[in-house]
Image (cartoon, rainbow, N blue to C red; front, side):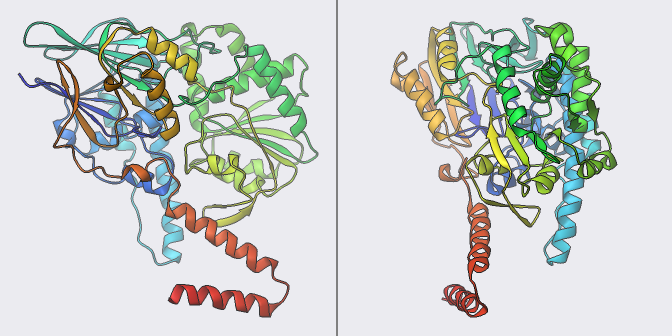
Length: 528
């Protein structure tokens, strides 16, 4: 009987593109099928063929709805997958609105890109998938609640556990029947929520497993533990400091959960008089629809009454249409805008930033994890100039961060969660974390597990799951990206910085002769 094999096709030494392929004697399973975010080099993987044949996949198990875990499902369907997609009920409801939104954003942004490309005589691109592909994907969803075993393949069954990360999020337990009648037990963490999360209970999962596949997003850092009331006080301070005549507080936010927590907290702060009552605009059709899903699943949330109370402010406005979104540019009095996407990579936040980054009366408040190479990370690291949709924008706005809305466990919480899974009999794979976070969590795990049982897989690597442990397969495919290209700024980022630096230098020259000399020097370098 052939041993199972696991391949890591995303979230390997990086935090996006989660996709793990598990080959068993009776079929092949995908755990998640997420969109890559970050540098253009990484995002190009979304357009390239999968490193496997989609029609060979028998089933997909989805840990949660975030786009870096679900965003390539319609592409999988478009290219031949027609099996079942298992998810919790809330995840299934959320992923429907998220994938429809993703298809719409692709359509709009591809149209804008092709318009710019035509002016520069560059080739057009096509969306990765469209609404028809999403509708077909939705038909394949199969809803399964927590704590219930369900059949995946012959001899393979699964069970979802509440991961405490977001509405519907799950860790996945799998049992694979072996030739001797025993079960090989695997646990995929999904994304693990922190110990104290506003809306969710602490994460749960079984122990005494054979292989653990564990996320490491915050594997190299600890956050200060704060209660919701303390978090609101920190948010209140940021709001008060942001208030300026004709100014705005712009908050890039993930549309699902983060946006709902923010508008709930802002609503409560204004009701209690801790900050002035000002207009709050939710500039994201996805976040608006997701908020409706949250209301339908309110019984699954902790502290649901107070949360929903915070969503009821009369000063909360929803920008559903493009016309409503564009009208925000004409606002004059101070206001708050929450817009997706959370890493500033797509959607309406790009327009909001284009309109406000160059203004001193603006504040941009970053409240979520920013992957390497994203515009959000570049702003957070202090860039003075950025390029958005081909335009150079000076950064004069205040850039602020709050790291208390994250849905991810920090290092101490992850280590505690892993220890609660002991004994882990055969191995731990550390995934879903950039290099430093991945390495530090792996090294910490080696402090209480045998070193040879802790692995940090690279993109597209394959391991055989043997009775004695995991073995890197000799026939592991060539990775689509080399390890030093994953979760890094790439040459596109370098070119952008170079163009911005050249423009700054030319602008600093005081006379035409100096500018001409600088241009000639640059030309000589290019010609050499």
